[in-house]
Amino acid sequence: MRPSWDEYFMKIASVVASRSTCLRRQIGAVIVKDNRILATGYNGAPKGLTHCMERDGGCLRDRLSIPSGQRHELCRALHAEQNAIIQAAVYGTAIQGSIIYVTHQPCVMCCKMIVNAGIKKVVFAGDYPDELSVEIFKEAGVELVRFKTGAGHAD
Image 1 (tube, rainbow, N blue to C red):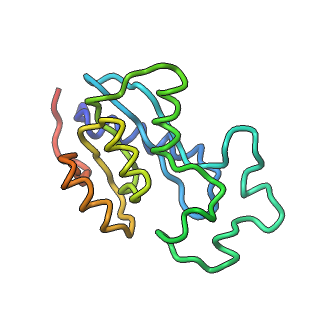
Image 2: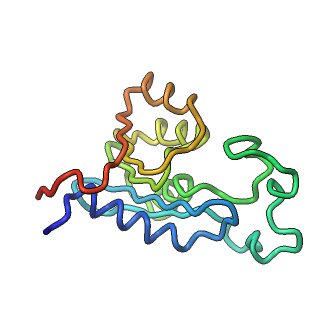
Image 3: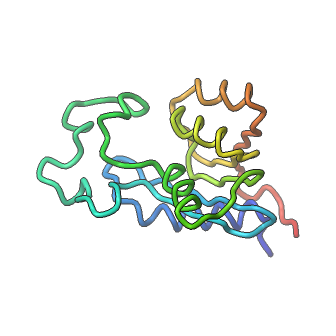
């Protein structure tokens, strides 16, 4: 059967996540408008910097036993959503009014960027421990949708 658009773009987000260089969690994001891909991103170190998987000592947050969802400022990596938004900016691609498909619920930092970028809808699959982002999306009027596998096939 032919996949729905949500299934199609979530599968692509999963493939994008496979490029991640994060030792803790692999995340992928795809920004879409009118069923056309505008930008993609995965989590990892900034362009030209050594990836955590290649550094002596690996992940600083792991070494310090920092729980998931806390102390983002100690992480070398950019998040998938951030990289997708930056990619759109670098190439001059307007993303206002778009949808972002993400393998996991966005954190509050990414949430604020998504709101300010004018993205109107977030479709995500996996959980992430950040209730503040849910509150901000709701207040900003950004639709937050949990993706359900096999939720239907549509054109």
